[in-house]
Image (spheres, rainbow, N blue to C red):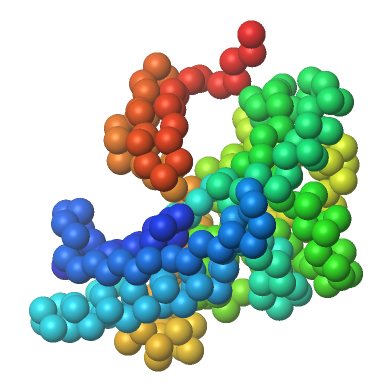
Length: 284
């Protein structure tokens, strides 16, 4: 029997679980995250806490497997999902040099109003989102560039929480950091949803350097392998393939069976959403 390890880097917790080939959950672990409120309307988190909690959960799952007499060397891959509307900035080594800001934060309210005052058609045509919103990572990126001292000089990439964790499990530096198709859509602005690529024109309008955007991968692409260091920390074997992973919203839609145009799912989670599948961008 082969096994597959996955984690969810969520708003309120990090969950790690191992499943068998029949999709049975054989072991699992969960740890709460920390949310900080430095100013009214601001919410900050720490991607290194996400990394530490994921490693902790992996270690606990490995221990549980051994207690059950299950072979951890049969784990064939590692993947993770995380919050699509949230980013941090990293240096050239891939280490965070900004807070992690997500959809709960409203510090970009005035900048959102400014961007929307431009009344541009390109956002709706290329992303399906005609207006900026406080929850969009594109707006957080603009905030980092304007307000984090030295970030323009030392910042290398913008990255989401789950890709940050996956990249560190694989020992990647900033130049190899990535985002999957689904998580990319969390940016709200700055990309072409139907072509699954960044939009240079939008990024130029927003003042976001294209070279600071992570490379785009498929969710099932192998982005690296578990390092010896993390293997020693977790009790798992080094060299396990690590996949690109996916955004939490996309994973929950698949899990809910929302996979055809016209289907819908009502999500009553930390972020409440009503999600409808379509064949493409629909503009009124």
